[in-house]
Length: 387
Ligand code: KIV
Ligand code: ZN
Image (cartoon, rainbow, N blue to C red):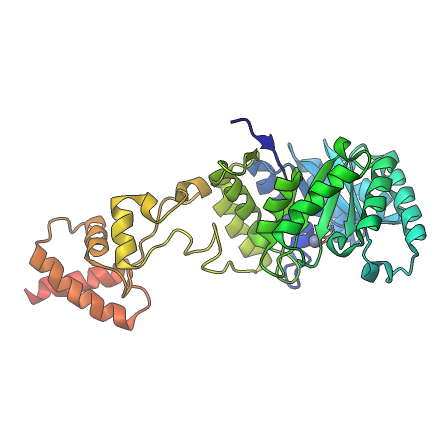
């Protein structure tokens, strides 16, 4: 089956870093950018150059160092922001300016612009950005709460002024999958010139729907997904890169879209982002959580030992892990205990010996959350001492 390409736009270093407390140092940002570039991210949003001298320097250096990704910086809808952004990204092999303005009624009230005044501002700022750079992305912030007619009008203005990518942000995570798909589909069908640009989806996770909304937007015609590693981002975070990429890989049967991501690099970058941002990954987080490929219950462990597909829909190796983990706890059964003891060198246990150690193991497991290799070695030692 031929697959359409979907571009992966990573904003860990911009929207992700906006998470309160997730600030990264200059060296950490360069390290994460290098890992993103190596894993095949198409566009790296490296920061918000006007925000601080540090952000400007980080974006400039990432632009100089990146080997293959397009490097993008964020700018509000004014010339000063856009010029500063261009100064930072212009060193990249492939630079992009991303400029935005809040188009919903709530957001229009902040700069106190009328609809016409805002439309003029969009025209002028996108034209200005396009005079500096061939690759311009424009976003109507809070698009999913913007009046339909006004959204169409502003998108059309941005396209006419030279935007090459139109990003449709669900800034507050308000939309639902069916709306997300329809919104992109209807924009592409309605706005003149829409077929000449790439539509992007940028979802936040306030209702836990960011991944579903992003994939629905792709079904509606979006060909760029904006996301962050581990779903880092303001409030409940952004769409998680690892979730959309693995969903497209595993469910290519119903979502025939390809990304250029080397998925075996996912675990490493997830761990690095957790370490440098200080945001630990929850144990049961899809794809990258400690328990995402771990099975404790006896029934599951027995199934996994016989055929890994019984309880896993993807291979741990595909995301960069060395294998499934079968942690031993009070829910574990004899099959997993025997397999673990074999791994530890006890491969010729008679059934009665296994039964004996199993009773002691259960007794210990009732008192401990997890029984580790050293605990088992101690139990085995006790066992042979008793004999
Ligand atoms: O969520 C949002 O609307 C944004 C824009 C700046 C694109 O991050
Ligand atoms: Zn955002």
